[in-house]
Amino acid sequence: MLKFSKMLYYNAASDFISVDLVQNVVRDLKRGKAAGLASLMADHIYFAHPVLLVYLSCLFTMLCKHSVVPGDLRTCIVISLFNNVDGNRFTTDNNYR
Image (cartoon, rainbow, N blue to C red):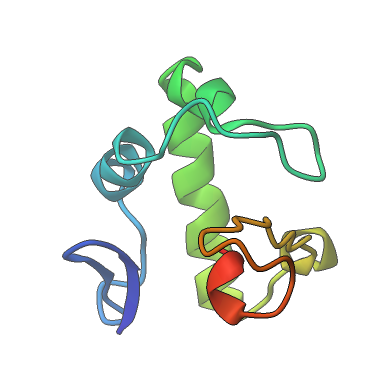
């Protein structure tokens, strides 16, 4: 079983990801965050037409069924943010979050 969000699971025996599962995950997205590589924000998905949930359900079902993840979905950027909580410039790991 793969864990997607809080107590929601994809069950390989059922062989599909339901629209309700996608809807629950989209509802739990943090809004107002910066856009990703595709300039797509969580707000775009949250406020999109409900038919998008059906398409996302089909997309993720096919990805799981065929065990394929496109290269664009595997690409990410990680940016460490400097916090400076203890007055030291760059000396401790606690200054980054």
